[in-house]
Amino acid sequence: MAYVISDKCTACGVCKDTCPVEAISAGEPIYKIDAATCIECGQCVDACPTGAIKQT
Image 1 (cartoon, helix red, strand yellow):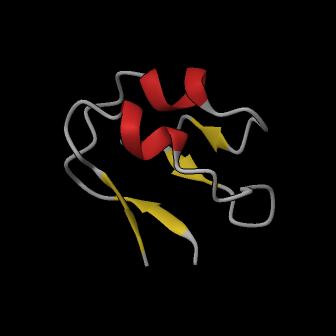
Image 2 (cartoon, rainbow, N blue to C red):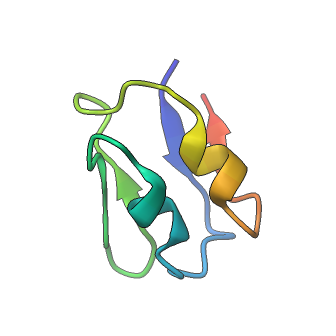
């Protein structure tokens, strides 16, 4: 299952810094996850202070 970042994202960058495969990048206005690169480890979910990252 892929992860997605919702509108709750505040673009703080914590998820990007946590991702071991650099699947997360800055977007406008919220961060985005590249599903092809993501290894679904869940580290971004645990790191997100707003709970903006969910599995689809």
